[in-house]
Image (cartoon, rainbow, N blue to C red; front, side, top):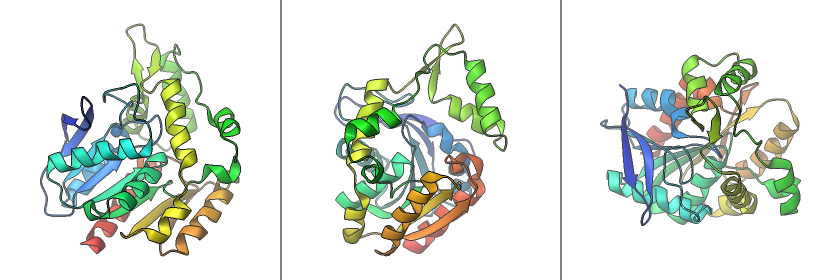
Amino acid sequence: MSPTVHRLPAATDVSLHALVWDGGDGAPVVLLHGLASNCRTWEAVGARLHGLGHPVVALDLRGHGRSDKPDDGYDFATMGDDVLAVVDGLGYRSSVLVGQSTGGNLVVDLAHRAPDRVAAVVGVDGGSIELQDQWPDWDDCAAALAPPRLAGLPVADIVAHLRRAHPTWDEAGIEATVANMEVLADGTVRPWLTFERHLRVLRALWEHRPSKVFPDLAVPAHLLLVDGGDDWAVAKRAEAKRAEAFGVRVTWFPGADHDVHVEQPDEVAAAVHEVAVSAR
């Protein structure tokens, strides 16, 4: 079943673009993308979860994709409140929140702030990220992780790069990732999330310390983490060990892409479904 496209009210004067799969007796599932990404990267996972009986919504966070782009509100609390407003509007009483990368940390933060609205959380190669471990100084983090300047590049070059970098992805996954950017009439791209707003969300991620949240987390949490054999994987191992000490479940995806939800939607959907069933 294909999703229906909606604009759903969030904060005052802010609406979020959403893909909605209506119906199903399972626990509702809310899918949140990572920094500078978009809801279409969840299309394959969303369809599979709906096939397993879950009502599902995938959202473009504020500033991203086709959602509204206000000048402020790029902290975790405000973005999380956007999500709660959408969930309330859909009538989801207690949802499984799933976030990839930065979105994983966002759902952990949201579950900590509003545990009565959340059945469980799943971080997909996110949720335990602690950037201050590697970059104690914000300016150093911003310099290291500032986004590339993609505006003005031909979309054909972006597509070619994605195909080279991710040979295991299908064309739907490539198209969904290209949707991180607006394609202009001249065939060039412009990121939906501006450079300045990107840094503001990055700052929110840098400020977030999930190891200080997990001890007080009142809902089940499961991390689906990628081990790419690189330096980042070493950092993730340390983060995962801290999380496991507080009862967080961790499943590893060896050799997978950071966007494992695009690369392995069957496996990710199955893991989310297991969490949703056990949380009911």
